[in-house]
Structures are given as C-alpha cells and as structure tokens.
Image 1 (spheres, rainbow, N blue to C red):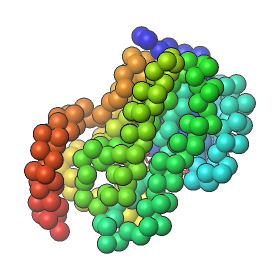
Image 2: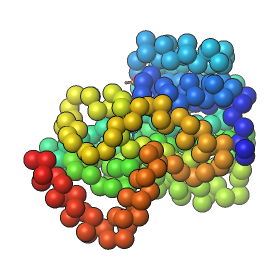
Image 3: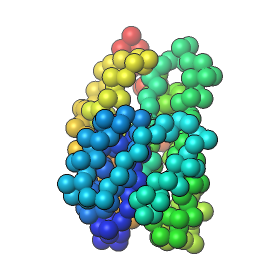
Image 4: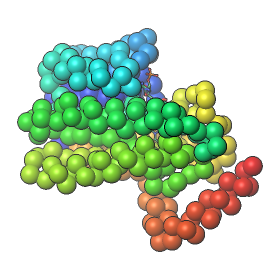
Length: 261
Ligand SMILES: NC(=O)c1ccc[n+]([C@@H]2O[C@H](COP(=O)([O-])OP(=O)(O)OC[C@H]3O[C@@H](n4cnc5c(N)ncnc54)[C@H](OP(=O)(O)O)[C@@H]3O)[C@@H](O)[C@H]2O)c1
C-alpha cells in the first residue's frame, strides 16, 4: 500500500446521498476522519452517524457548493474544524440530460458551475495545505466525458473539463508528493437518474450497479496511487474502441439514439 488512509482527514463533497455517501462511509471504515458536505442537512446527518460509528471525529457542513464566492470561506472552516484536510474528494455534481435544442447558455453555465468551477475553487482553496500534508486530490468525472452519449452535451462537457483539469494537475504537481485520482462511474443506481428537469435515462443497455460497487475500486485507486478507475472496468475497452475511430463510434451512437426515439 502506498497511501495509508488510516488517520487521514478526508473531505467528501456531495455526501448526503449516492456515491459520496458510500465513499464517506468507506473512508471512515478505513480509519479516516471524514468531513462531509451537501445542501440537505437531514440526509447529511444520517450519513454522519454512519461515519461516526467508525470515525467519531467526523463532521458535516450544510453548504451550497454552487455558491462559488462562499467556497474559500467554507474550505477554511472545514479545514479548521476537521484539523486539516489530507484528501479532497470532489464528488458533488448534477446531471443534465437534455438534447441541445432544450439547452440554453444559462443551463450550460449553471451545470459547469457545480460540476467544474466548484471543484476547481475548492482545489485552489485547499491546494497549499494538501501539498504540505502530502495529500491526495480526487475528482469524480463520468464515462460520459469520454463517450459523448446522447443528450449529454452540457453534462459530458463538465466532466471532460474536470478530467482534463485533473490530468494537468498531475503534471503540474510533479515535484510534490501529491497524487491525483479520477473516478469514472458508469451507470450507478443513485438519485442522479431521478432528479427533475432531466430527460428520462431511457435504455442504455448497461447494467445499473449498486452504489457500493464504487467503494473498493476507489479505495484501491487511492491506496495504490492509481490515476484513474472506471466502474465497471470494461468501459476501458469502450474508450479504446472509440479512440480507434471516433467518427465510426459516433455513427454507432447516433444509430442507437435513433433506435430509442
Ligand atoms: N450515478 C452515476 O451513474 C454517475 C455516473 C457518472 C458520474 N457520476 C457523478 O458522481 C457524482 C455523484 O453523483 P451520484 O450519482 O451519487 O448522484 P446523487 O445521488 O444525486 O448525489 C449527488 C450529491 O451531490 C450533492 N450536490 C448536488 N448539488 C449540490 C450543491 N449545489 N451543493 C452541494 N452539494 C450538492 C447532492 O447533495 P444535496 O442534494 O443534498 O445538495 C448529493 O449529495 C456526481 O459528480 C455525478 O456527476 C455519477
């Protein structure tokens, strides 16, 4: 094991539900003290109690991460109350399943705000501290960043942006002990597919996995200093297939989308 999570302080955004909640409990079980945040206080408190069974000093904060101007102050507060941050897990995010005819510049920009600009602001706020503590920065991207699925232009672009940001950070941080990690979830059974103001998911042909399927691959990625992990891992073959002939891959996607209309 290259990075021991035991005794570390891990801040997980968007941990009131779904992947973030499962990861928070997973980190706590590894002996990390966990800080969790999101907008829904009641749900955060349920997750906090689950974390505290394993990590009694864990904390929760109610915060709207789309309020970019408040993020530096939030990061300072979270760090002070947690006793420092070793690992920042940028997980909070929203879907945006709409064809381009139903998008507006405002929708695109608000999706970018929570899925891209918010984790970037938190990174700036905590970077010096994480470097000083030889910590880790993790970003939750999406297979959509690499596969350009139907009705996902706004969403996939936010995830492609965060992937590019993360990869460039790994290069820029080359003279520090910090490692970058990127999670590419496939279709994981969370509230993300039931939120209002999105097109229905439709048939994907991809099996929806339970949220716990994420936890071990993520812990292994961090503990073994791996840059990225896709869950399920067979998506790696799909990326390779796409990069071999992008135009042909998109033709296949168009044919699939037409078959769903
Ligand atoms: N599920 C999948 O198949 C899948 C696939 C690819 C990528 N992802 C990514 O995985 C991450 C987690 O998604 P999920 O599937 O677990 O979805 P989820 O169950 O809807 O969870 C999203 C989390 O983000 C929080 N959040 C959203 N907007 C926020 C805001 N403005 N301020 C603070 N917190 C906010 C939500 O909490 P509150 O509502 O309480 O604020 C919630 O805790 C996202 O980045 C998503 O894009 C998921």
